[in-house]
Length: 100
Length: 130
Image (cartoon, rainbow over all chains, first blue to last red; front, side, top):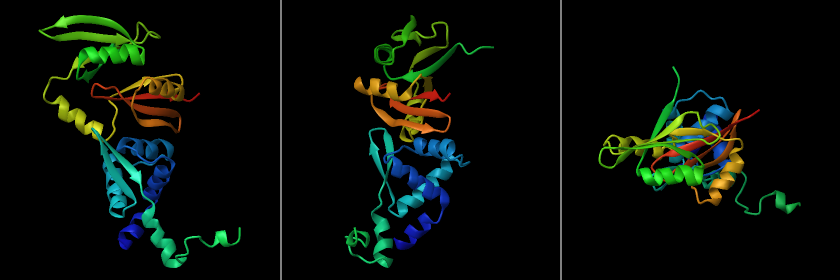
């Protein structure tokens, strides 16, 4: 899973998709494509976005959910904890809270 | 050449007419029986009574369901209507129980939202900035 996580984060378009899902979780493919094209002026096909989403899904950063006829993409930031736990320690209170 | 008419497939013409008139606020223009149960049924915007008519076309052809299901799964709207203020329209329609699959989002020069018309289609509403 770790390799998939770092691979997923290595691409700027995938990081932009995560930015947009942070702003609003639960987006259709159409909404994600629209945001990339209209807000970020990224020239990328729907198939290309689908492939990026598949990589994010393999890393556990994006989860899909069907509601009736629709399919939504949700953000899951849980896998990112591996990064802080590996290099910044596992203290759940974090370094900042020691010195408010 | 002019665009006089555009169309969306609808599961149920009577329900589509109700949604278009009572919820969206369009007005019926033509309603002519065709065959045993189908109607030539069009609506227009009261803001543009001589403008483009929207034909509410029966979705009986077997190709319609797979076509619309595939587009719906990806959240792709089948028509776009212009509104003065997407956010105000979103609030108004939500108050009437309309389901949105995309809340209003500012996307560069345009703000859009996407709603379920209850007759098998996603409809995008949009406001151009400026």
